[in-house]
Image 1 (cartoon, helix red, strand yellow):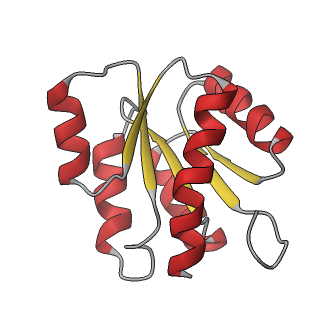
Image 2: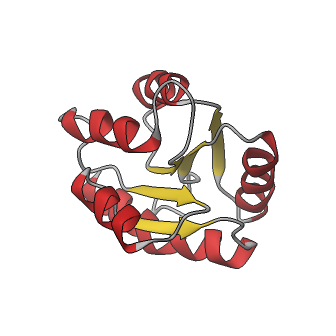
Length: 132
């Protein structure tokens, strides 16, 4: 939670309805405000409109993949400090390195557990609040 007792606003971007809904349930149980997007373009619109304090973004999505989505978010001065955690079923060194190159803070391998997701929020949510 943030210091002002308003819940941290978290955006989950994934083209899988199952992953989005699982993350939403886990995050709401953790007391966080949750926004959902099903592709990169939807994510960019929600980032601009709602200014989430933390973003979980799938890598493999149609239209605009997670790397492209993250790079666009990070290029915008308003959101360059917003932590982005990539989500993927791939956990290779190359994938992680590419994520770092576009500005993501961490990498969560799917399927993730409730504890893994909430731990990432605790770890990177502090950064988001500190940067605000």
